[in-house]
Image (cartoon, rainbow, N blue to C red; front, side, top):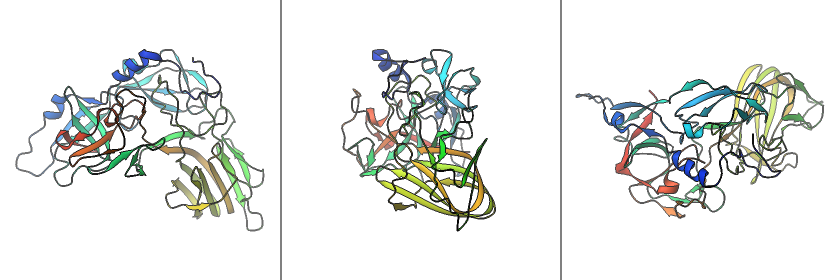
Length: 392
């Protein structure tokens, strides 16, 4: 399907050169029919918000919001996912490479969707002004766009290294987590999670069993996650910012060192577990005390303890240990938050650092590699914010 050179962590070599530039320009930000957005039902004399309902047409906010999309399923690991299905974004052949297990599979698009239905509250900013993380509708000269606010008036956007910063800090995670790997969908009996010793851990068909007691602790044995490059022959690699929904995207994937972990624990005896996370700034650990029963855990290390450890590294960024107890682990998912960056080589890239004026907002699409937004067109003015996208 593509030619991948060893060490060149590009996703899919399908679009290149000037054609890539033309296609990226055509991958417009999510568009709305302005007539639909402006044709709002009258509210009479009540205080109910004025709501407009319309359908997403573009790809710049996926995976949070999809325009035209299709469902595909890898026949090797069984994982199903959604890909953008605008004409210029469809795969050029009949084979996809699975982002989860690295297998090539013949895909058959199903569940074709013409676009997510969204609701825009045109009075959403009357009581409280626009805030960071809000998804907003923005007026434009030829269309209405949907983006996420990542910085507000008076704040400074900069990029001293690889990632956009707001007032010198990483832009906060707003609750959107993207799958990096799902151990519940293995390629055969293979798993990216392995125990450093056989002591305390047993691999099952779907998950792992763990058992330890005070005299026989398995802390010395870690269940470690080893990331593999799905687009480079499953070689050991660092976690990168893949967007599985962009099926024909071609770019160099960027390293990610902020991760989360989702896991279901079925505890047979009360257990003490530690969850380890390697980051470039140091190793973090979270301890959880688990009672008998089933627990669905979401670990994000926000309240983690820093610790020195040489047991995990960039290619093995996550690990689990158990001090005592007995339990089974299943549905282990590695996830990552969105992070934002600016390609300074883009011909329309804004100059940074940028201090926002009193009525200016910096907006970005969640589909960071493809979205055209404030990184290219500059901040948007308060008067151009038509409303807030809400759940109803």
